[in-house]
Image (cartoon, rainbow, N blue to C red; front, side, top):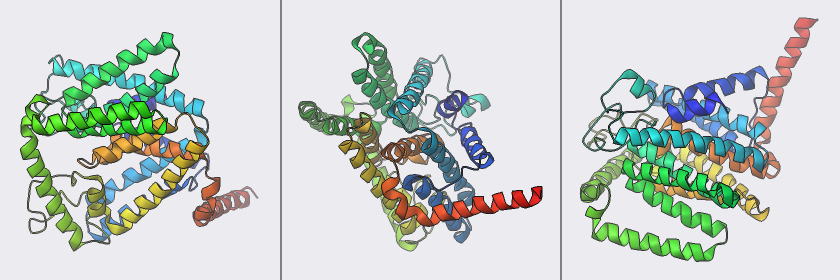
Length: 403
């Protein structure tokens, strides 16, 4: 943790340093292996993204594929370190309190103590957007460089804070209560409607997994009433006056991206393929992704990439079921975070960001790590044999040199 957590929370660019450090340590200590099915799947996504980049002759997509290698390093590190609930809680508590500092920075930004004028250090630490526009002019970015990305992180940490609020003694409730209020304020100031909807879904799933059916009923009613009010009187809500134009914008992006998928269904266009697509292929506003999780994934990495993701999710949900049967106290939080990402993923693809993508990978990896990989080892016997043989060859070479 330590400095690594600080770099991850407070910079969309320095977030790569802990990933590089993790991979270096794994190589140095000769602990590279396939890990859990989730971690092994991330490694396969790394190789596939490179292949897609080469096939499309998209060298920016090829370079972007190395993000998966960084994710693999962090996931494998967690596989080898985070085997108990206590260790995971310590990690999440540390990230939660770091996020409170990020939210405070967001409040300073909202009251213009931190201006939105571009500067290299502001861009480095996510205090302003790289490309400003009217949509982001009055929305905070926190330390994530984009309002929607900040909203994703804050929403997940609200769920984390709720977990600790329920778990801690009453004399410590106040700390997490005010922390959650601060994060909710920051979330509202981001103006992200998709993240707010995803958070409501996350809370419903949390209480459902925890067996609190009365809370589920209350939250469902609140959610339905809120959605009805939002649709009927959208002006009452943040950026509600833009609802109609947002729907039209999303629909046009989805149509164009679906047409891209139909042209290259197997390999996809590469991670940066949507933004750099020719005008005769993509005929609308230039965007980095399809503003939908599954559609973005299949356009970028094709059906092969989608198959790998679904295979990883199959094992992940199997691990969640195992944690449920074992009555793991973290299970409601872990499944709620997954529900948030998939709920928010209907409207956005925030995990394309290095920070939010890493957050998604960390929570997913923790699920498989806590559940254990005994039931999954046969499926990954071949990659494990590969790494074992590789380590054996290295050991043999070292022995020969010493002789």
